[in-house]
Length: 155
Length: 127
Image (cartoon, rainbow over all chains, first blue to last red; front, top):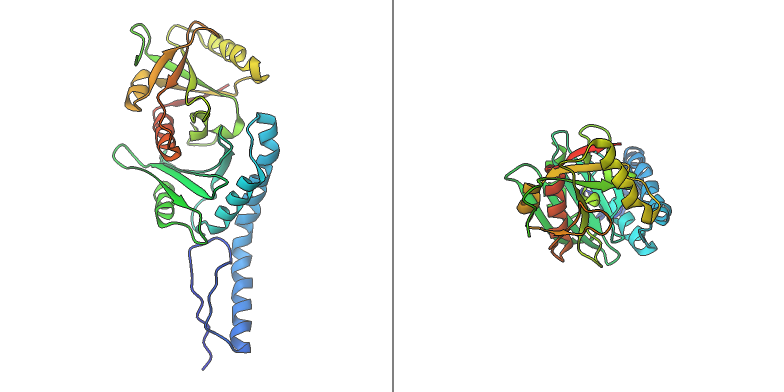
């Protein structure tokens, strides 16, 4: 029996696959699955990644210094984002960090700032009695607190 | 100081397109309120007694230093400043009604939480 057992994560990208399949059939299955997923996921990244890259140019005009390391960290964060929900709006913070903002239909907001040390500072406003903030570190998969924040802001 | 007895309405000018959302729900974004790390304060204007046109003219004069005109502004009540535990410091040099909102925490996550509070309490006015 041939089995392909990928470990699904919530990420937007296709990195971090772990497979126990070793046969040619399993490898072909893996390639097919990646191709299929890529068909659906790439458009999200195609929208988001140029916006991040554009902040380097935009920051010159606005006199906010966004450096290459921050662009790189923000790109890595974009790859780790969940596949569901709206695509965030990106902008440069006054301190040169890159902010990813999700604004829900009723005004709920969730915002994550990425700096060049791969630190993720997040805060959410989901109503008068539902607010969060905290710090996480950039990792291959999106931290759970951030996934929850995006979910709550997208409702 | 948390306010001025004769004023209660504030405006924060927004000079960057990416710092506010035009489509519904139109709102300032947190980046519009975050302070620079070097100063840990943001600029605002008492707008109680001012007609619309004069508010924008003052915004233009405040933006002249960086050769920019405000694209929008966030209007909010002084109560939001108290709620955010920020202090209001008069700074009449650029304009008699100009103030700085001070007392920002150092932690970026805490700053963002305050910025989101101010977003939630603000009305976006696009020029």
